[in-house]
Image 1: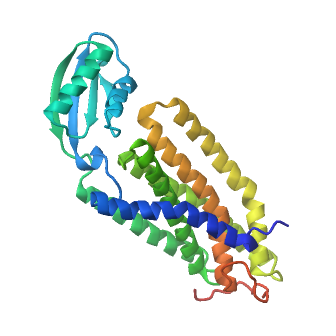
Image 2: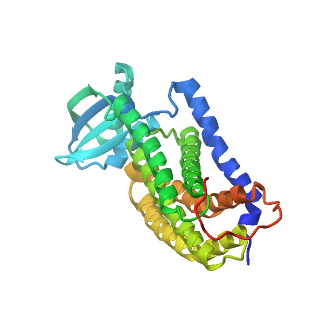
Length: 316
């Protein structure tokens, strides 16, 4: 039997390599931008510019003009018909606007400016704080729910705590990916990034609970085995199901990432990175942490093995 939980030091090292860039990116962003992440116009506000051309123009082509000029968080979409586009981007001065007009005219011909005005943030400060508070409350709720659901096994709070740790791991990996892409392509946190994070959290917790539930069942069936043996057996029994679910989701995400267009690229890429992290943390973080806590051996150097008990509840 392949001993996943006994190689936990390796999994911890991989996780540290994945999440440290995210932590450093948060620290850098606090000093550089005054916020934990560089924020897009969804959070900061900006400018909306509607223009009508004499022929159909693809939103992705218009957006490419703005990206080439350094406005990477620009979004563009058609309104009314294929000849009319609306572009949202950060506030710029008159000189920068004139430069954009010249570039757009050179590529697509003369156009009519329908309007050009400043807009407020789509997601205000209060909404941002509410979203963060919701994540915190959800994490506490997940911990308490799992502890209650697993109340028939020893140390039920450990199950909830390990699930939340895996959840935080996936969030930090997603932030690490955003940080790398911020320096590579100028990506910033927008409303879709927040949506991607919440979706990743949901998938991660779901898979973790599936494995924990199998551990609970096997604790009753194999009372003479050590906890590490039971946990490892449970991982292997649910491995095909966990990987099958994640691979199916990844096929869909990668397809949208490739064919969905520029407006969805960042959203799909963050989702893909988060889902891969979720698959990893569910198998290689949550359960190994649970075993380490039970054995009081955090790096796989097992103490004298003790068979699992009779399944009576015990304090965490």
